[in-house]
Image (cartoon, rainbow, N blue to C red; front, side):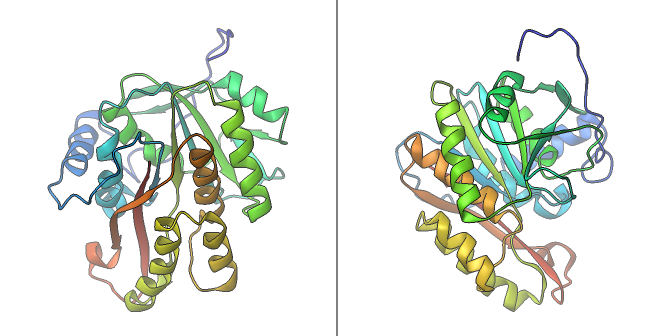
Length: 276
């Protein structure tokens, strides 16, 4: 964090609703998701650069998210970049926080203010106070359980075009090339289709992820062949991770909300992937 000693802590808009507000209950739930026994896919023997994780309430998507965050346990990183779509309208195409720290029941996470300042010199960046955005914060309890100390670079995108997403990924990779970085793309998949249709749409997106084809993710969404609310976030993370050495993507989890609430008439898709 930069040299400023003035601390402004972001008040959580979702603790106690999207995830438990009690620290002990939250830690136990996250640990269960992180260590839930499941068949482990073959993972490339190369450094973990990034993740794709969902961002619904932990009850719905925590099990899928945990399958990706499982691989971050003990990882040596000093900076975590979380890129999400913005679920709220702001004037800037890219927004971040105006606070110095995020806070969950598990503690405070310092924001990488120096990196935000450098990013703002490259790409117009809005700084938001009292934002209601859930898609960055929902990932933090996992990281707080798997990593020791890290700074957070929280970003939410309104412009998710390929041109903008690719540029963002490349600029971020350049700014952070000398740091130990974990890149996190926060995105759900299809929204409110019947389960059978959702799985077809989600397969298109996840196949593009597995093929390490970020442009195809955005093209498929724009053409209606797939759906990801954070299509640009996924693409930007894949571009940045690839610029810093990632060559493979591995799908490690998938489910729909119907598997949780047994309502298969209107589901949301959740996917998890690793970028090595």
